[in-house]
Image 1 (cartoon, protein in one colour):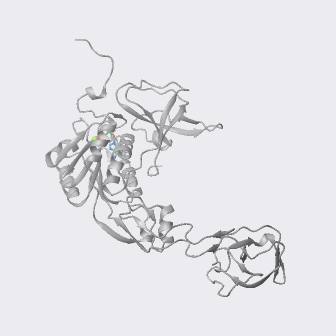
Image 2: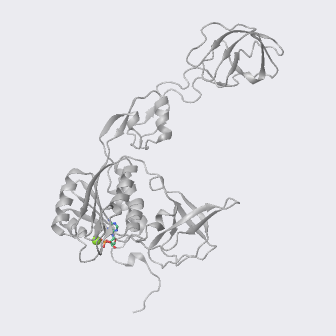
Length: 416
Ligand code: AMP
Ligand code: MG
C-alpha cells in the first residue's frame, strides 16, 4: 500500500477540524428563554433580552453646546449691539421672551428658548454692562444640540442579544430606563480533577502542583457575567467524580471540568460522561487542546476541558465560550483576525490547526507584526499570559519563517 505524505486531520479517527467542531457545538446550544427585569446598576455584563427603544427624543429640547449667548440669527444684523435680557442655566431655563435686538446669557447644557436659534461663544463676545457685541458671522443652529439630534423617538438604540457594557449602559440611563430586561444569568459549575492538584495557599508535597485551571476557568465565566458554582478539586476517583457530575448537572446550566479527558489510566471524566449522559464530540484538531469532551448530562451542557492549563484556556476561549455565549442569549461576535508579519520562526507539523501565542504590535509604518511568546508547551501558562493574540496556523501549514505573513487573532475582551 502506498502511504500518502499529506497529513489530513480528518483521517485520524474522531479528530474534528476546528470549524466543524465549533459549528457542531453551536448547533446544539439553544438560547435561554427566561427573562428578568433588573436595575440598571446591576446590568453590566448581562445580555439584553429585548430591543431597547427610545420612547422620546434626545436631547428633549434644543440645548446649548457652549457657554455663551443665545440669540435669533434671522433678526440679527452684523455689527448690531444686543441687550442681554436674562440667563438660562443648566437645569434652570429662561422663561421669558427674546425679542429682536435682544439675547440671553446661556450655559452649556442649558435650554435654548424657542425665540433663539443660535449660540455665540462667550470668547467671541464683548459684554459692556449687558450690551453685547460680537464680531463673528452667525449661522443658524451654531453651537446648538437640536432637540432629537442624538436619538429619535421609537429608535432602537440597543438591539437584543448585546452584552451590556460600560458604553451602552450609559445609553440606557440617558433614556431614563431604571430597569432593563435581560436573560437570566447562566449558572456554570466548575471543578478540577487530579490527584496531583492542591489549591493555591497550601504547601506543595512531593509530586504536587497547584490547581490553576479552576481559577482561570472561573475568571472567564465571571467576566462573561455568569454565576459560578465552584465545586473545588475532585480526586481521580471514578465514583467521586461521577457523584459530583450528577449533582452539578442537576443544578447548573453548564458543567466545566478540567483534566481526565485524555486516554490515561486515571482519565475518568469521559467514561463517566458516557455512562451518565451523552458524549457528542471528543478531540478537536487543534493545538493546543486536542482532547475536549463535549456533551450533556440531562439538560446540563457538559464540557470536559483538557488538563494542561494552556489547552484548557484555549479550548475554553475558542470553543466553549461561544457556546456559552449563545446559550446565554448573546449574539456572537466573530473574532478579529488580521494579517501580520511574523518576526519569529514558528515550528509546526501539518495536521491540526495551531493556535500559537504571540505579541502583536504595529511598526512605525502602521504594519502589524507579531512575535512568538516562545516555548509553546501546553503546560506553559506564560506562553498565553505574556501574549495578546493567537497566531493561527492552518491545518496544512508546516511552519513559518520569520518575515512571512501570518493571520493573528487578537485576544477578545474576555481573556484580555
Ligand atoms: P490530565 O488531562 O488530567 O491528564 O492532565 C494533563 C496535565 O495537566 C497534567 O500534567 C496535569 O497535572 C495538568 N493539570 C490537570 N489539571 C490541572 C489544573 N487544574 N491545574 C493545573 N494543571 C493541571
Ligand atoms: Mg489528571
